Length: 235
Image (cartoon, rainbow, N blue to C red):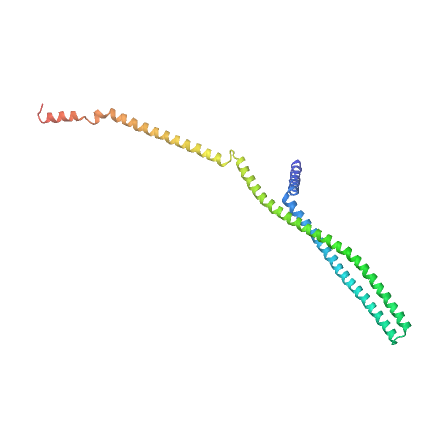
């Protein structure tokens, strides 16, 4: 039972370390930061489009109100001309011309209100455009930083791996294996030399035995010569 709990603790500990590694990984943090900025940029772009659309509507409305004021003023003038020519009773002409001028004033007032709103909208557009420009700049900067971090990470990992390999040189390393091989070769060389000395010892013994028996088995040249002389009757 204790072993099960121990394994579960190890798993939880490993997952916690993995989570901390991800949390502290600058590349992942930069990637998340870029994603957040892009979401902010998307929202700002949407707001900018909406404000600009409203600005366009206000400008159109302002132009319409100004044109309406001009039209009512022209109508008032026409009414007065008709009254002066007698094609329209003077009283009616004055009354209707006054109504037209009233509508003109109302249109001018509406155009003035629209103009004030338009000024506020222009400020909002300028602010949103500045925000969009700033976000784009930050995103570009972070993307460049991310590229640099990725390159540095590759170099750092390669360097770390190489240093780990160099630091882990020991009994199980390649150098240790070469040392063992060297020792084995030296042992084999010593053994071969030992067998060589044993072979020489046996050869030397045989030579010594043959030398001791040389007088009996192989008579010397002087003995053979004396025997030949005797056979020939020579002294």
